[in-house]
Image 1 (spheres, rainbow, N blue to C red):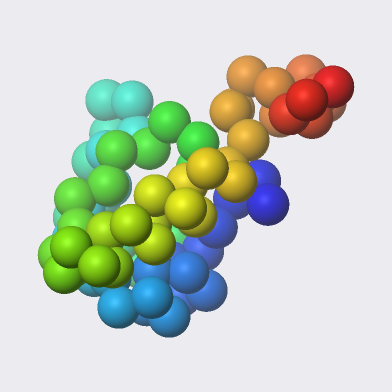
Image 2: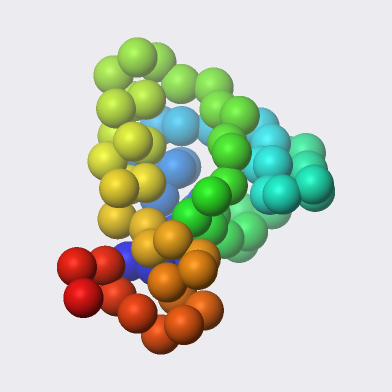
Length: 75
């Protein structure tokens, strides 16, 4: 998985994404179709149990620099 949509990941796992910080840009109350990208900083509301789930999802995101150059993790 290179990117994850909020509707497809966070909502399904009981996590509310309140904001996304991407570089110098912030998205408050991001749209459900907003993509979560490697390097994004997420501000979330969740239980401790659910926070572990978002960490698991994030591990599958490919760093933007690798994606831009057509490389895959482990290659």
